[in-house]
Amino acid sequence: MAAVAAQISKKRKFVADGVFYAELNEFFTRELAEDGYAGVEVRVTPARTEIIIRATHTQNVLGEKGRRIRELTTLVQKRFKFPENAVELYAERVQNRGLCAIAQCESVKFKLLNGLAVRRACYGVVRFVMESGAKGCEVVVSGKVRAARAKAMKFADGFMIHSGNPAREYITTAVRHVDLRQGVLGIKVKIMLDNDPTGRNGPKLSLPDIVTILEPKDEAAITEPSAQDFRPAAPSAPVVAAEATN
Image (cartoon, rainbow, N blue to C red; front, side, top):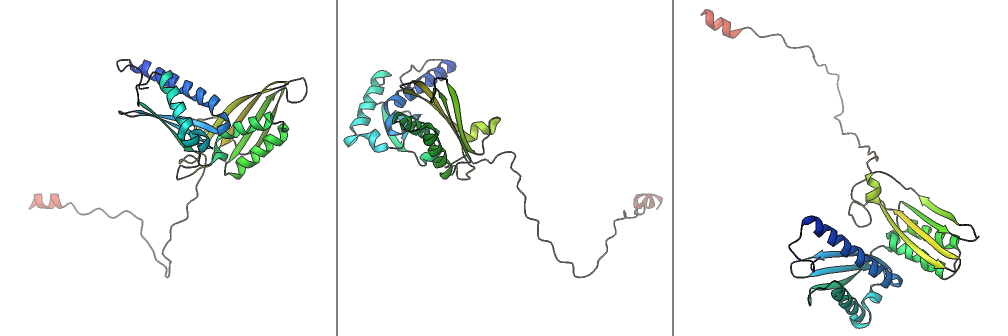
């Protein structure tokens, strides 16, 4: 964070950066929820601090003639006490919103707010995620769904891992809360990305339990019989001893 004084310990700097990112993410989550907000990235350069907002509807984030992005820039600058022209906000479109857990979680949230049935909303999102090229998807809605008793409904499709380091690399998760008339519902969306060598739609590294069978090497065709002697060669005469006798 650029606004923090330079003479602080490494530990305090990491904590300050984490708090700055968490507060920024919370602010954009509330402010840009209807515009398909899908995360934020902070890049600190010597000249200025660049904040990249990822969203599905970038035109709504920018606003008419860039008015809204300027308002957000002013709010961030005043809240975190940045100097004039020391912070810059950019909007970046999400390449594949079907593989973005935050965007799909917001989609389920607004479908439920508009009165759509839970099963229909969740199955629609699961199908859209799987058609976008994901390896697996899981949507969990918990709370007072229909009756007075709270319960959790899980909708899953495809392949999903839950433990180990690949779960950190391949799984994207998002959690949102919906305030309905009967109470608060919790929505959790988990998407397992597929392996992508380019690194666009998934991790470059493949899963560690994937076994790749290679093609055998081409061997020269045997046209006539041949024999090979594998016996050890006979020891040669002691030349050094013969020279010593001479």
